[in-house]
Image (cartoon, rainbow, N blue to C red; front, side):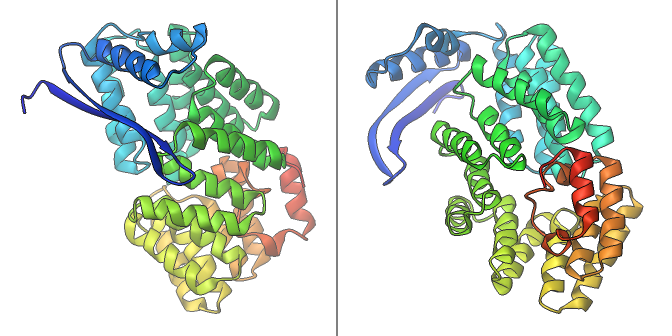
Amino acid sequence: MLADSLVIHAELIDVANDNQLWGTKYRRTLTDILAIEEDIAEHISDALRLRLTYEDKARLTVRHTENAEAHRAYLQGRFWWNKRTKEGFRKAIEYFDKAIRIDPTYALAYAGKADCYCLMVLLDSPPKECIPKAREAAEQALAANGTLAEAHASLGWIKWVYDWDWPGAERSFKRAIELNPRYPTAHNWYAGFLAAMGRDTEAIEQMTRAHQLDPGSLIINRDLGVIYSFTGQIDRAIGQLRKTIQMDPRFAPAHAHLGRVYIDAGMYAEAIAELETAVDLTGHVTHGGMLGHAYARVGRRDDAARELEILTEFAKQGNCPAFKFAVIHAGLDDKEQAFEWLEKAYENREFAMAILSVGQGFNSLRDDPRFDDLLRRIGLPP
């Protein structure tokens, strides 16, 4: 096949029973990737007899850049961003920067860069280093295009997980969804925010919508399981997370969260197996905290202590969140140490604090007045 040729397979799948309702193949050349997107979107909507509103049609045909090379770099950036790995985020930033160098007015590329820095805090990068970079990129995106849904969603994430500005975060998420109701990430992140605020029904609605919009996304499938667990639907969470792992057995975030859910279900052998798999895939610093917690819960105190030692070595290099230590000490029933580390996580404004009201690993601390005090200071419901 020629180097400049492109083959696209388009399918409509009924996700309830995995049946294909419609499918076709498009063959094009890469003379203008921007025109290709518009052409195929129009053909698919016609083939499916979609009744698109004027706003829907405008979103399908909008061009955020006239430079095909910049757009190609942006798409490559989003590919690596969806890996949800440290290496993926590093490569994604390189591609987004490339797109920006080619077209300094390309708002989507700035938003993509913001999203990388937003999510790097999930993989143990210091929030006080990452979030200012995320905020700067999001603001640059909005300066280039004030109606860009992606940038408003990025600001919603920043206000939620770092600023703890709950009203401001909700306004940003709602604005993103208003601007583009079909942007799955906005629904996804808004669902996490709502779950943390104890608004379970709304959280399920938003996460279900995200899944409807992008049923093939690994992270959205994983996060559907996360929201089920946050809202107390443990059986549904386990089922959804297992489905995600079937989609990609090497997707560590699904193994890690399934391990957390198994702990809540009292299925400790299964929890340890999943968390060990996650650690094997990504390393101790990312998932060693919950693994140490699981070891402690089944009486494997030496193994839990070993995880503390490993994390201590990472902490000397400045890249291990305090939350990891807190969750292991909680598993060991060492409340004083657990709260000491939680206070450090609070000072660092770590991501785990934004979901402390629903996060796993601290059931043994919830009856302590210090836990409610932490929630109050963060602004979360008890």
